[in-house]
Length: 262
View (cartoon, helix red, strand yellow):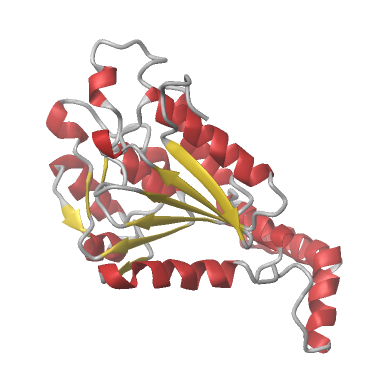
């Protein structure tokens, strides 16, 4: 989906074997979050989530950079809407709340808003050479919007250090502080992504959505209330169509019906 006939698409969507691959393809500006890229990313995320054939979403990129954050050339002198005040939160919320697992694949660095996108994904895999930075303070702004998805991932000490210094850190440090799940040699990146997507495709769609919602929920004040809520949730899934199919498949030593073929 491009803005005009003369403006090529900056984000692509392809679906194969239950996996929707969304590719940021604006290498000329390091996949910065321009207005066109934001709109196309939202549209493709919505399409992938609405597609019953899609079980897992992979967010990746072309070029040497995953995402450089906001397009500062566009933001210069722009009003609130042009700065993505509504669209960036929409992107992060869509990734965070997606009922389908989202895997980020990084073969190049992420900065500012790009790091917020990585944090909003359920699983993030990066090549060891990838770097990250919260560079906002160095240009006189703060990482306010992306903090909503980043802070639940990072330890408090790491958040204070990295937000305040703007220091560049590598993928191994990112994994150590909880920003990403795995840092691997570049030549192993696709295999590591495939390892995760292969496991995720085995999960029942409703159960995956329920597990994500459970992970995001606000916990009750007391342990007793928490156990009561979780007992009710557990019983509902055991009694569900998916739960019963999973139990039957286990007993019959076969693959559950929800696992995509091929």
